[in-house]
Amino acid sequence: MHDEEVEVTGPSATTPRRFLWVLRHGKAASEAPWGGSDRERPLSARGRRDATALGGRLGVGTPLPGLEDIPPPAHVICSAAVRTRQTADLVVSAMGGDPPLEAYRSLYGADTDVALRYIHEIDNRVASALLVGHNPTMLQLAWELLSGPTDDEPSHDRSALEARPFTTCALAVFGFSVYGWDEVQWGTGRLIGLFTPPY
Image: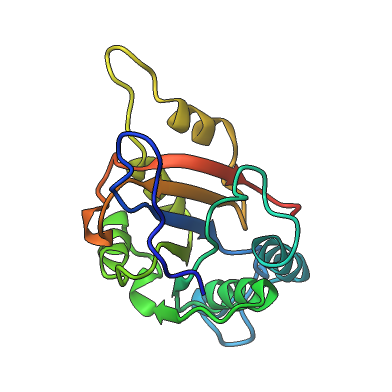
C-alpha cells in the first residue's frame, strides 16, 4: 500500500502532495433487475471490461501515460449504488492491492459539496485516493477542483476537460500541493491526466 507522503521538488519541496483519482462508474445496464430501482442497475459486460482493464493499468500493467511516478490509490471512496460499487471492486481487484474501500449511499445523487466533504475525511497518511461516482457530479467535481482562467491566462486544465467527453469509466487525476486532505478546496487542483476507455 502506498500511504507515504510524497515530496515534490522545487520551491514547494517541503509540502506533501495529495493525488485524487476521480472516476465515473463503468457502463451500466439500461435497466435494473425486475423490481429494482436505478440504484440497482449493474454494470454491463462493457462496463466490467473497462473497469477491469483500468485496474490492470493502475496495478501491474503498463502505467497510464504521465502517471508513472504517481502512487496508485491507497484508499477508495464510492457511491453505494450497484454500478459504482462494482466498478470500484473490479478496479481494486485488478490492481492487485487491497486498499480500504468505503461505500456511501449519500454519494448517489450527491452534489459536489458532499463529495468534497468525503475527500476532506480521507486519512492524511494516504497520499493517493480514488473516488468513484456518477455524472453529472463527477464531471462537475473535476471542473470545480481546477483553477479557473484569470485575466492574464486561460485555464488549460479546464480547456482539456471541456474538450473531451467524460464518458463512462472516464478518469481524471488531480494533484494538490497541500499538507492534508482537508486543505483541498475548489480551484486548488492541477490536472495530471485525463483518460477514457479503452484502457
